[in-house]
Length: 360
Image (cartoon, rainbow, N blue to C red; front, top):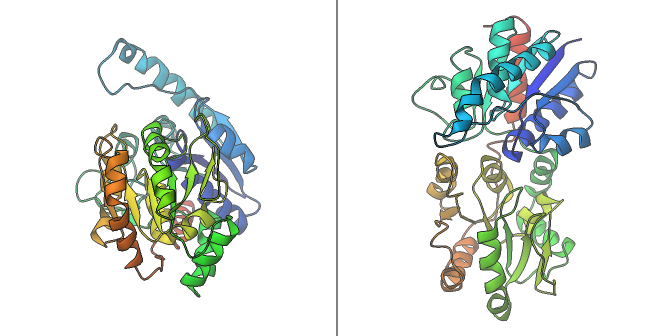
């Protein structure tokens, strides 16, 4: 029996791939002990317990994007986070990290305690935590190729998919047209009219929500249906036969399948799920960060399954002027998804097993 520690906290982009790996690992290694590392402020506080995994919290190391007085506190917070991580790793056989605030102190703690560890990077532009960790281990895996830096020689494995996304692909690949029509009906929409699925990531997006709220009337006149995941803090307007708004979309697999057009941010998880089940996407990259969201979408754009619109350009008038063109591009697609990420979990598990067996 082995003890496996998973470091993946903060946003859904770090937590969901970790959970996908954990679920599969528990199926193939039912006697192993799995522990998640997290902080008090991340989505792991709800997602990990809901998945029935143990969660151990460590101090968060806050690093502002611009120099600030808070930087003086970074060494103190980092030492505390490393100390707490070492307590958990004391009994661990392997650590796997997925980036974010939790991973950097976990990697340092693993190196100090001589605990072998594996890294998975989901974004096309790796984050600082995984770039740091890759200095101390060769056991690294990527969703997208990286051609320079400490992660340049990593395995390309894809992005671990949630179980319901993978299951939906397996069902839909037999007949994509039928699966998409059935998904629309299951959500309460008309099968023969176009459907737009709009969401702004796990926290929602005020900018995207405002454009949809302003545009929904004219889109309805054109016979366009909308499924809108507005986010938990959004002020919801009333739904009608052409427009459904929800604070949270629980069945993302059916929503992706049903959509003729997806309008969303381009986080790594979203891009992988759109690639697997989606038809055509308009991505509005998050305007802050290190530019990874634009790069995440590049592969879908190059394969003519998506396009990018900057947030400052994405207005109600832009959407009304371009919606017919976007739906026409969607109609030109064959309707099938992609299986490129279907084996990502198995590949990461194989790397973990290699490390557990003493491989270097």
